[in-house]
Length: 44
Image (cartoon, rainbow, N blue to C red; front, side):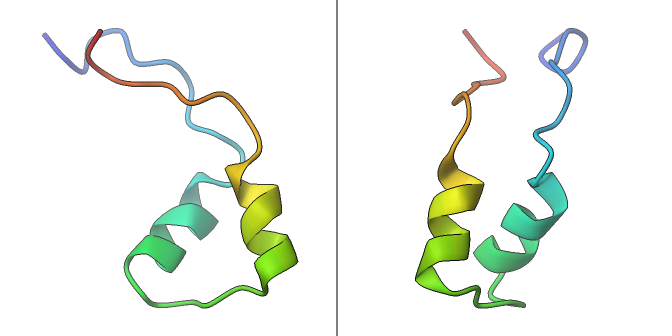
């Protein structure tokens, strides 16, 4: 039920996941770039 109507993933989704898992460490400016965009929650 939760995943049925998820919106499309953000453009930087893969990069964000890699960063969150500690696999990459982008420069501060790149991190700010990845933060730009709507903050969507799967469960409303």
